[in-house]
Amino acid sequence: MRGLFIGRFQPFHKGHLTIVKRMAEECDVVILGVGSAQHEHTVTDPLSGSERIVMIGDTLKKEGITNFEIYPVPDINCYPAWPHYVRSILPPFDRIYTNSKVVKRLFRDIRVKVVDVEPVNRDQWRGEEIRRRIRESEEWKELVPTYVAEYLEKIDMKDRIKPIFGMSEETEKEVAHLLTKKDLTIATAESCSGGLVAHRLTNVPGSSMYFITGMITYSNQSKIELLEVDEEDLIEYGAVSPVIAEQMAQGVRKKTGSDIGLSTTGIAGPGGGTKEKKVGTVYIGISIGDEVKVEKFHFNGDRWQVKEQTSESALRCLREILEATH
Image (cartoon, rainbow, N blue to C red):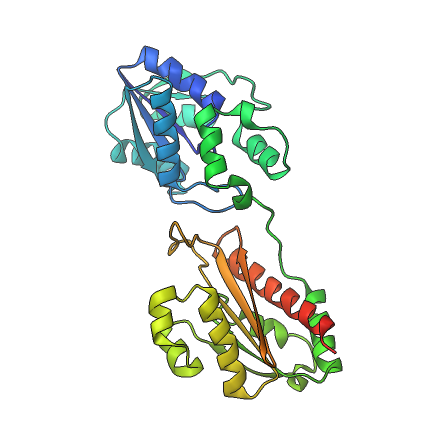
């Protein structure tokens, strides 16, 4: 007998473990499908598919459960076709364990035996509640298996689910006021934000008084040719680094003759991240006079949300510097 249980497992909690333990007793093989496997590093889906597979696998082994298999199940966003899709990408299974009315109906329609799962401690044993507790620094470890708690601390789960902030027109207006008041000009060199900072700097009437130009130096070659970024530093440190953010800010200031050079370089996602430089890692550089300030950020959310937060943080950093400039 081969049983299937599908979930997002963001994260794997004691409710999930209760179901898997029951399945391990009733089935020869427990098949676990990691749903929404393509999503990662967002507030609602902070863990990647591979991270969830590792987390679940190691937890079950520590619990003494060995008759399991784990597979990624990416979304297709088509409910009628979903059970056929699941059956096509997973090994054969005889039954599915679920408490979802929709899932029950869909799999019954294709003549798969459905085993009802009664929710246990549903108010607490659910991903949304656990993520909320982690985000708000409340007690949460008792809601997940011990290994899961250790794993989530190791990857700094709290940082991944910190709130996402958006763009504020007030920030744009305040920066415009300060640039005009102090009679300073600015030019931008953007990579991950794709020109969004320049767009916002010119979103205020009268921006021609302070804005000179904006460069979208997306490729490494454009950074070298347009900003005179050092090629050896690009190779050694990578484009997403404080060294390159500094050179970009200095380069655009010197090239344009502006008083201020502002740069952005980062990984907007959803791909491109590494263990050392995760999706959402962004460096913002601001060059003014002989000084350069570089700030590192890690943003959550999808590609657009990372770009929004990058632009907002860039303007906030600029505002802070302008307020301190005499």
